[in-house]
Length: 487
Image (cartoon, rainbow, N blue to C red):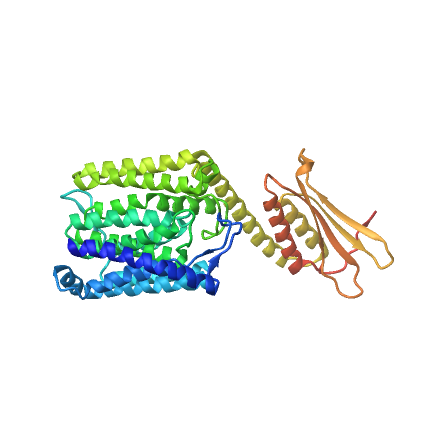
């Protein structure tokens, strides 16, 4: 116990000493986060605070390797796993630091997270089974590798996305590390306890400078490192026992970031944006929209996290199905909290899913029609067949009319027109597009004027116009020149 206490306070003291130095260095090298549309702060703030967290945590963890007691022996006995975790965690930290200083694409960071998770699995740190009751355990086999990667990558990104308010990610991370430390001590797992306490101490010291008004942000180097180590430590807790509590307690401690990430991905999916696209609809943004100040919003999230974590401790004392019932009830409460603050709306989500399905159906039908029409134009052999193919295209793509205008060298204008047999009553929902046709020197100038029914979606109408334009790029020349109907 003396070693555990020393690790916590030692890392906190190191963080208190190193963080002011990092603030000065960040200011000198320009590693600051400036105000913008994605930020809430109104002045430049250093953004590489993760350097202090990394140094404080790693220095105490490495020091334990040289301690001559039972905990030091346990660390040395698991040298491969500990080395893999610390090495991959360092790599994650360095990638985050490069992103803070230079900027990296989201897919690069995602790929690094996957590789780091795979490295854990290769070292034997993976989820092998989950105990549902004292007598029933669910072996995962090869699926354990996939679940481990999903868990590590998911938690890492959840913590990263939660770093949106002063002190938010650091405070939630400290609570999560405290929970993992309690669980590890309860399971007599000294290694996980040391990892969690070293990280909790570094976050406690860092929070002195990170709480509102923040003098420094942890940045991606801090949030990615924090999320990765928490995820890896929770998996190591589970490897000592297959009980559900090994993942349940860390999941509840990080419940708000995890659910916020899931709902954000769902929202971006429905809005047809990149899953990595930034937005201002996170849980903490909703609290600010409700009129809360930054400090009050962060404290409220702290309290909610502590409440959910405290309730989750019942999972440790409950047996068999009782633990599952408690865990399920707490998850329901979490979703209810998101519903109350407006971060998730069931009716709007269902409506969005239906609209997404309808758009996908429409897009698939348009693609099928386009592929058929390409074959149809390939079979054209004379000018009459070409115009018939144009008319069939208009019918299949729900055009109101198609007008082919031909301007002769002497200025005469000739027109050919196809109209839909049953015009729709709402003429205001028409999209008018003019498409010039390719022509050679000496040929008359020709262009199509098309009118497309919007059918509730201007995007779909524009997409059909684009597909028609592709057809004309490939098949816009008539097999032979044809005189039109003069007007």
